[in-house]
Length: 175
Picture 1 (cartoon, rainbow, N blue to C red):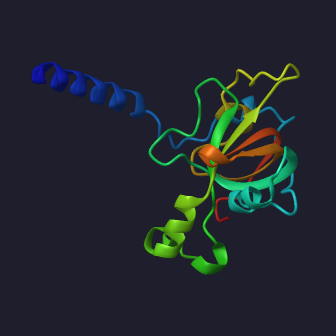
Picture 2 (cartoon, rainbow, N blue to C red; picture 1 turned 90 degrees about the horizontal axis):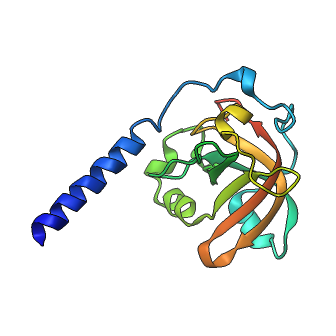
């Protein structure tokens, strides 16, 4: 029995490593494939953090939310789907320009860890998630800071905000 469990564990770990080995591609998606209907030319005003939305969303509402495309140890994109995960950005004023501040400050670590995740989905007219990879469709990649416009609702039991997005703006790398 122990041998079987050990073999199963090794097989699962190997499968996970094989799956994740290509996840951190640093190349920018093919800009020619970007669907400009969903890419915003300028940054929308009054973007909220996921924590601010959590504290104010009661029912589904139109929102503007800023965050970083990231899902921790998991891949933030679903292959072949116009969907991705956002996490809260570190407080820029508190960090005073230090890009590694959130990793060193216990307050910031706790705040970011407790912030809700945001699942962003772009849907077609029938309400189905668009079957095109968000990286190519929107010209985005893991680690980008973005601002998303759409309709959102907060799902308290799992501390998650679901956004049916209509547009995305990618901030410049220094933001």
